[in-house]
Length: 389
Ligand code: MG
Image (cartoon, rainbow, N blue to C red; front, side):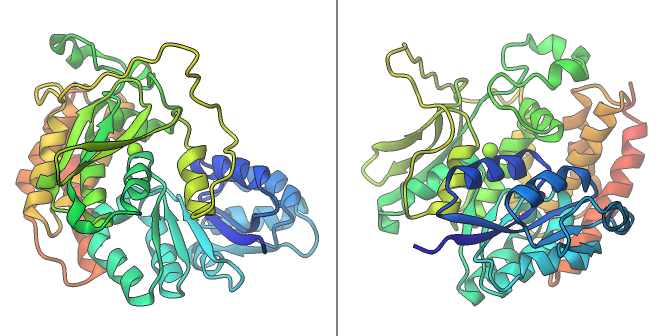
């Protein structure tokens, strides 16, 4: 079997480095052909050498210039600069699967370009579907390319749906850990600190998604993500708090029974599934130890503790640019909380105010979505001043 060539957009982040671990474990199956990052070129030197990567791209042109001048990369390594460089890596002719894990909207253009050239895309950046679900899924459908979900919940659902006719599926159930403040008294939430918010009970992830996990804005984004990935209306997508993060999601079948996918909380599992599907090989991550007692709890999410979940559902119902408004307002709010300018409970308050202030429209083009994103950031920054600590 010929090794599948992959390109990793966002190679220095947590998804990118775990993708490299998976590639390291399966050298006969996976070949890393391209690596891209925003600016941290020094972190690309070792993997570029280890995997003999021919092309490296840096979205920040100054970083690309530094990388070229450094002489740290093997002679013959092409170092591309700017957003076009990311798109070029995503469209390399030999690449069949692109891992899209760039934070924020910078991943949008290269991901769309990859889909249009019929690459399978292992999608880790849920923002792309939240903002541009209509455009991304249309591009995939038109080209006959596959969108493979890296997000652990969606990957679990993708695995559970594979062998079933659509008529068998009644509902989707996303599990949520409940985040850092699952058991914090509600009255104390206003005064929790950034350091406390960054202590996720199960997953080791970037700071933004860890805070989003504590507010459940992350699960709200994931409801919208699932809506696009599985063409399922948001009111048929349930959320359940499952503190152990072992059940990665469930599907409710037409007869009322449920099926679940279980594995330890390691992103290596869903990433490997995306890259090796339909083949199953041992994953380079710990196994569930059934010789130990395993308790699996499930409770409904408390709307008072997680107002961002209801706000995301409202944005999903409103449709159009409303999910983009939710996402942008949440990013501004998390930034303000991180900088100490907003209390933790101010995140949901700011998102609610931004959703009320920025009207939703049905976007005809991607530019209209990006305009709504920019408009929301300006509005939310202004609204944040009124909510300051
Ligand atoms: Mg997730």
